[in-house]
Amino acid sequence: MEPVVAYLHYLSMIFIGAFLAVELILCRPGLSAVHVRLLPRLDVGYFSAALVALATGLLRVFLYAKGWPFYVSNPVFWVKMALYLAVALISISPTIQFIRWSRLLGAGSASLPAPGDVARVRRLVHIELELLALIPLMAVLMARGIGR
Image 1 (cartoon, helix red, strand yellow):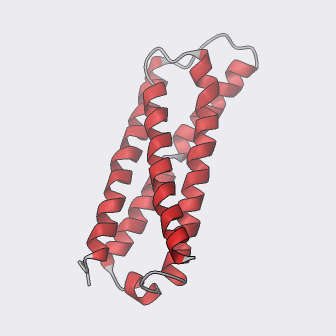
Image 2 (spheres, helix red, strand yellow):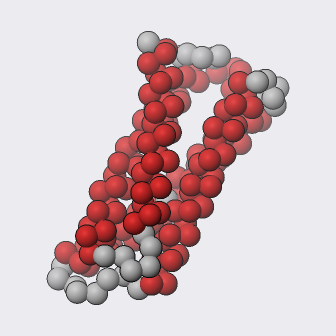
């Protein structure tokens, strides 16, 4: 079972990156109504992948892999957790905006999001991707015993 949990953990991280990359591609100046409606649905996929990553990560810490004492005593693990939390917290604002934009469009508003709003959300999604890219680095460092 441990290999399956590890595989799902890695796969969920790939999906998180994929969903964020697609959000970044779509959330750009000239955002269309089709994309406004699509972004909240993509964000649900992103959130689902993040939950799978969290659940499988907790399983790996407490039931599999190297055991919880290995992880909690390693400062690199805490950097990894801080990065995950930072990505999660930063994602709140884009999620709220995606939902707001979609609801306004669904309520019959013909106006699309202001370019400044789109640029701000795009910047946040870009930061999420940058921080997400550091998480596997922390995993590699931990696996090599760095931080112990």
